[in-house]
Length: 130
Image (cartoon, rainbow, N blue to C red):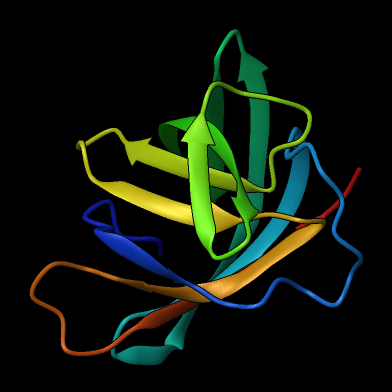
Protein backbone atom coordinates (compact mmCIF):
# COMPACT_ATOMS: atom_id res chain seq x y z
CA UNK A 1 0.00 0.00 0.00
CA UNK A 2 1.16 3.51 -0.78
CA UNK A 3 2.66 5.26 2.23
CA UNK A 4 1.32 8.71 3.13
CA UNK A 5 4.76 9.82 4.26
CA UNK A 6 5.99 10.03 0.68
CA UNK A 7 8.80 12.58 0.68
CA UNK A 8 10.37 12.60 -2.79
CA UNK A 9 10.27 10.98 -6.19
CA UNK A 10 13.31 10.67 -8.40
CA UNK A 11 12.30 11.47 -11.93
CA UNK A 12 13.02 8.67 -14.36
CA UNK A 13 12.50 8.44 -18.09
CA UNK A 14 8.83 8.47 -18.95
CA UNK A 15 7.23 5.39 -20.42
CA UNK A 16 8.02 4.71 -24.05
CA UNK A 17 4.90 6.60 -25.19
CA UNK A 18 5.50 9.81 -27.12
CA UNK A 19 5.54 12.97 -25.02
CA UNK A 20 1.92 14.06 -24.76
CA UNK A 21 1.20 17.26 -22.90
CA UNK A 22 -1.68 17.83 -20.47
CA UNK A 23 -1.61 15.48 -17.49
CA UNK A 24 -5.40 15.64 -16.99
CA UNK A 25 -6.86 12.13 -17.08
CA UNK A 26 -7.03 8.78 -15.36
CA UNK A 27 -4.05 6.48 -14.98
CA UNK A 28 -3.56 2.90 -13.90
CA UNK A 29 -0.96 3.00 -11.11
CA UNK A 30 1.18 0.18 -9.82
CA UNK A 31 4.24 0.00 -7.67
CA UNK A 32 6.11 -1.34 -4.69
CA UNK A 33 6.99 0.12 -1.32
CA UNK A 34 10.54 1.14 -0.33
CA UNK A 35 12.58 -1.80 0.91
CA UNK A 36 9.76 -4.25 0.21
CA UNK A 37 9.57 -5.03 -3.52
CA UNK A 38 7.17 -7.87 -2.73
CA UNK A 39 4.74 -5.36 -1.16
CA UNK A 40 3.13 -4.28 -4.41
CA UNK A 41 0.06 -2.14 -4.93
CA UNK A 42 -2.24 -1.28 -7.83
CA UNK A 43 -5.01 1.20 -8.33
CA UNK A 44 -5.83 4.37 -10.20
CA UNK A 45 -4.73 8.00 -10.18
CA UNK A 46 -6.99 10.77 -11.42
CA UNK A 47 -5.62 14.20 -12.33
CA UNK A 48 -8.18 17.04 -12.64
CA UNK A 49 -7.40 20.67 -13.49
CA UNK A 50 -8.78 23.02 -10.82
CA UNK A 51 -8.11 26.59 -11.95
CA UNK A 52 -4.34 27.21 -11.78
CA UNK A 53 -3.74 23.90 -9.94
CA UNK A 54 -4.48 20.19 -10.26
CA UNK A 55 -6.31 17.88 -7.88
CA UNK A 56 -4.66 14.45 -7.79
CA UNK A 57 -6.46 11.44 -6.29
CA UNK A 58 -4.93 7.99 -5.83
CA UNK A 59 -7.25 5.06 -5.10
CA UNK A 60 -5.23 2.08 -3.85
CA UNK A 61 -7.28 -0.90 -2.72
CA UNK A 62 -10.11 0.94 -0.96
CA UNK A 63 -7.95 3.76 0.41
CA UNK A 64 -8.03 7.21 -1.19
CA UNK A 65 -5.07 9.63 -1.05
CA UNK A 66 -5.24 13.27 -2.13
CA UNK A 67 -2.76 15.81 -3.40
CA UNK A 68 -2.74 19.25 -4.97
CA UNK A 69 -0.31 19.99 -7.78
CA UNK A 70 1.25 22.76 -9.80
CA UNK A 71 2.00 22.05 -13.42
CA UNK A 72 5.25 22.32 -15.24
CA UNK A 73 7.42 21.16 -18.07
CA UNK A 74 11.05 20.49 -18.82
CA UNK A 75 12.67 23.24 -20.87
CA UNK A 76 16.24 22.40 -21.75
CA UNK A 77 17.72 21.02 -18.54
CA UNK A 78 15.36 22.88 -16.19
CA UNK A 79 11.97 22.30 -14.65
CA UNK A 80 9.63 25.25 -15.08
CA UNK A 81 6.82 24.96 -12.51
CA UNK A 82 3.76 27.23 -12.36
CA UNK A 83 0.02 27.42 -13.04
CA UNK A 84 -1.75 24.47 -14.68
CA UNK A 85 -1.52 24.40 -18.46
CA UNK A 86 -2.36 22.00 -21.27
CA UNK A 87 1.38 22.05 -22.07
CA UNK A 88 2.32 20.50 -18.70
CA UNK A 89 4.37 17.29 -18.67
CA UNK A 90 5.48 17.51 -15.01
CA UNK A 91 3.45 17.65 -11.80
CA UNK A 92 4.80 19.02 -8.51
CA UNK A 93 2.39 17.46 -6.01
CA UNK A 94 1.85 18.44 -2.36
CA UNK A 95 0.37 15.50 -0.46
CA UNK A 96 -2.22 15.84 2.29
CA UNK A 97 0.57 15.73 4.87
CA UNK A 98 2.46 18.57 3.16
CA UNK A 99 5.23 16.58 1.50
CA UNK A 100 6.04 17.53 -2.09
CA UNK A 101 6.84 15.12 -4.93
CA UNK A 102 7.46 15.57 -8.64
CA UNK A 103 6.17 13.32 -11.39
CA UNK A 104 6.91 13.47 -15.11
CA UNK A 105 3.70 12.50 -16.90
CA UNK A 106 4.07 12.51 -20.70
CA UNK A 107 1.53 9.76 -21.45
CA UNK A 108 2.68 7.81 -18.41
CA UNK A 109 5.20 7.84 -15.59
CA UNK A 110 7.93 5.57 -14.28
CA UNK A 111 10.09 6.38 -11.31
CA UNK A 112 11.19 5.79 -7.74
CA UNK A 113 9.92 7.26 -4.47
CA UNK A 114 11.09 7.28 -0.87
CA UNK A 115 9.79 7.68 2.67
CA UNK A 116 11.73 9.95 5.09
CA UNK A 117 14.36 7.92 6.91
CA UNK A 118 14.19 5.06 4.40
CA UNK A 119 17.34 3.47 3.02
CA UNK A 120 15.58 2.01 -0.04
CA UNK A 121 13.36 3.24 -2.86
CA UNK A 122 9.93 2.12 -3.97
CA UNK A 123 8.87 2.12 -7.60
CA UNK A 124 5.72 3.43 -9.25
CA UNK A 125 4.36 3.60 -12.80
CA UNK A 126 1.37 5.46 -14.23
CA UNK A 127 -0.21 4.28 -17.48
CA UNK A 128 -2.76 6.65 -19.05
CA UNK A 129 -6.20 5.04 -19.40
CA UNK A 130 -7.93 7.84 -21.31
